Length: 434
Image 1 (tube, rainbow, N blue to C red):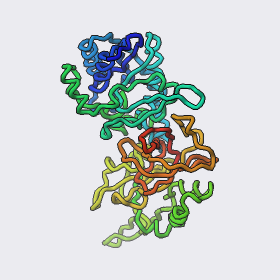
Image 2: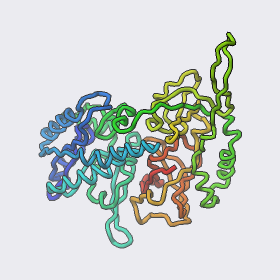
Image 3: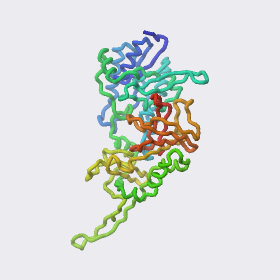
Image 4: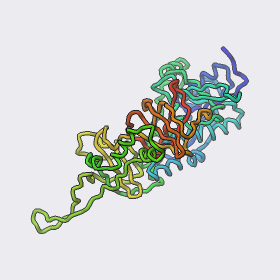
């Protein structure tokens, strides 16, 4: 077995089984390993457990380090986390967009603030328990470059969460369990009698935990009651925009830049308005007010704030009287209206084109950057664990457009679109602008 005694590695030990086994493997391989637990969150408001889960995690992490026989340290990065991740979350939700804090946490905290803290203690590299792989190769200019590949365990692949890392960050990153499956990781932990061997996987927002999202967001965003409007199929039958999108979709990659902008623009539902009328009650003496029937839609409920829901959301709407589930189609933040539709295949849920603004395009592999006017085929996902989708990327002067072979459910502004090669390498990503 090769030894790497000259290289000092800091493992971000979270108290979970994945990072524990990462530390175990590095120690066995002969690296000079030490562990560091980062605290990134103090508040408990909005968390479903209402207590400080990080304290238990820290206790388990410290026991793991002791069992493996490596030094253990603690670092408080809560100020950086609030500024770079949580404040970003609040800002995005206030605009009606849906951020991914786990992606931001990796870019801004684990491989930036945490990396800096590790380096200050002499670390050459930082290792995490992500299920992904890293390879290095020599570029055309003779310099060393790095690529990220999906983890061998397709059920646990976490490369999506690393989609915003740079070459500089990858140069210092290690992913020791990327070639293992989750059952193998559990087995190694049990054989080594690690305290985290049977610990359940963490859920919820990175380093915050499982939260009641509206309650969590209400720390900074106000609750304001508004209407929930159900959209009927008749709206799409009468919509010029819906008909135009169908025509442009038929043109596909031959669309002009302006046509791609139109195709990637979500449907605007603000034209569904409701007028009132007065009528006499059964006794003919009392006048009442009601909304006139609108064939395009109906007000079916109220909500506490359009900024607290996201496109594609199903839970928490509290709207009954339907055979199929109700999903969020769109949110109108200025007017505080939520538009919903019935059924998984509702027309308003499905879209075939999205846009990434020029400033939001990120190439992990700068040498693979697309030129304006270039089209390229990739496999794409728009959310974690979504099966990879066949798509064409079109680089244009007004942004990067992703045109899917099949319509996608719940394309959401603020989320990350990530593209892969057939060899499962992830060369780039971008924030969905619309």
